[in-house]
Image (cartoon, rainbow, N blue to C red; front, side, top):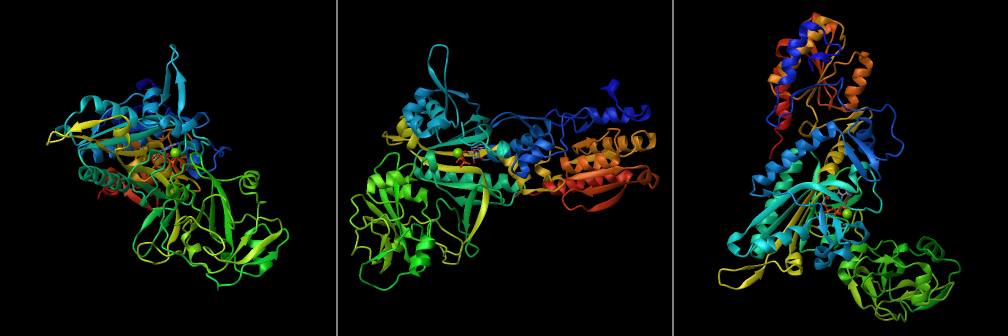
Length: 603
Ligand code: ATP
Ligand code: MG
């Protein structure tokens, strides 16, 4: 380092060298110099990046793409990840969880044993070893951890256990996008709990739920814990932790009245406004070319809600059903699948619809249907509605469920919308967008049963272990933080995840006095354990400020000829833009206090 002091004049080398030698308990130095630091920044927005977080992570030199959904993490990103890891470890370790590190490469037999090789489908990356044996790269580790537990845990006395790891996963996502937000290779914290009995498992679940609240709170997020669908992992119940951001891929239903929050995929509906109509006779009317609800409603001069949409759904693992819903509503595919016990429901293609129902698209009818019919609960209360006739160009008006066509099940299958009554308190709900950063599941016995993980109980009998699993995407969490906190100039790091806490910008690097004061300040900051990036590059002030904004470190301290003449430096807070002049002698102390205060955000 001594030979590579860049623009630093001789007389402040000693100060700087001392500053650069001080290390934190992890062995990382408190101070780094931007000259020679590997944070390759870009002036232009990368073309492929759709989200601000993705754009900024590339522009600020945090990540680089190797292949679709596969990224390299550069030093600034690693710093941020390490901070997140520390927050996660503290929350988990303090609740008794123990860290392990499991293999990324897993024998495919384990996945066959749990039956998930099929269910995971092409997202599971498979490979063969030189002997032709089948392996998969772990997208998650329920099978591997359950295999360990079934071999080594025999008695209820060995439980509870909570094991976690922070490790690289691979999921061959169909559409990797948004950088590390939805990558194919990504870092996950996955934890697994093992309990004797359902009540004990609930306690473990609650502890992880609380840990997650603490973790995302400490990260400084605006977030919500929402009731979630359990998806491909399956299980008794689950919550997702959603960082609120307009660009989020998830839609949340949230009640300003009572706080009920659920993923829209799962959100229950306690009725909603619909048009019941008055009982009429079933009448066949000519409706040429009126295939879609809006035009049909206009043509017949009826509200869209008095049309009963009939749609054919196909499933991967059960026969097709005809689903009925008021014309102004959408079907919730997840609720449809869950309530019928079928996986991967999808709207049938027009050709399939014609083949299965004999009806041309737009004129599908429940009248005389030969396949099972499921209707949304609201349809049951409709006294008359418009349905297809099965005949091109004709509809029925006055159709009454139960009288004119049979319905096998009335179920809650509609997608909740803004303004619908909250299922808990009845107040109108709102819709929000969120990024799922964490997920907690109570799994029950799904894996212990499939892999036969049992324990003996106090009375000598045997029981299946009750499991839970708990994930956090680390890269996605850092990306979500940037998504929630940035402006037109760059990242606005929250203190807890910021790669460095302060940036020191000497503006005239050839001026020994300016550099001397900057070096002294940096040493004082290092002694105060403030993580500092010193922009020692011999560059124009404008460029330094631009880069400082792009990198977005929370506290920027400028040392210039002008400020030094007054014995001062200029502090600018990245979040608020607030500028304060500080005496050089006490600046480090002030910065330390501000840093400590910003990190205090602990529950
Ligand atoms: P999603 O619905 O977004 O696909 P998931 O339900 O498949 O997520 P889990 O299996 O619950 O995700 O994984 C736990 C956590 O891992 C998620 O909450 C998320 O933070 C992270 N994660 C999942 N898939 C990805 C991915 N492709 N890229 C980055 N992080 C991911
Ligand atoms: Mg997924």
